[in-house]
Amino acid sequence: MSVAIHQFHSALRWGVAAAAAVLAAAVVSTPPAHAHAQPPAFACAPSAAAEGEVIGSGPGGFDTGPAAILGFEHAYYVSRSAVEALRFVDPASVLADRGPGLQAGIDAVALGTRHCVRIRPIDTDGPRARWAVSITEFDAATSFSHSTDQIITTRTAGGRTLLGAITPA
Image 1: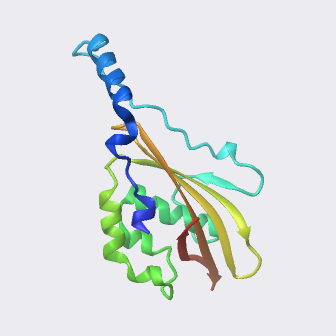
Image 2 (image 1 turned 180 degrees about the horizontal axis):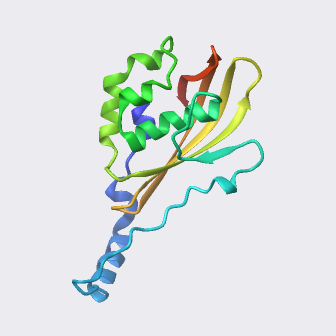
Image 3 (image 1 turned 60 degrees about the horizontal axis):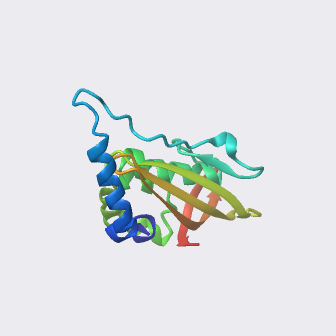
């Protein structure tokens, strides 16, 4: 899972021409030493959600599939804690045994990385549900943005909804 979530860009992606343009712009328009750069804007707009989908980055909860998914991702990106993230995972799932690997994936994410989660229902009939999930990471230090698509299965039992599986889409 951590490989699917954290595929970082390579220097080759930027290309020689882009690097030269950035260098030229930095030389020509270097701000005064007292100027403070503002981090680039990154919006996670729940109001942009189409009918039936959820967009957000909040702390989530256990009452619905989207709430559990948001909770897991919030623990991953904001709390940066595998222990916290595993609270949103069904203990009977294969994900439950991945604490050390999960923490390593979390630790590989640059501090300050922001995230936005888009969740769309695939099959939500019954106690097990499948969701199409797109997670966008934004590293303010590099202005790099990356999205990963996943299928997340949730299970509701005893009034709590938990993640059961995460697979690449």
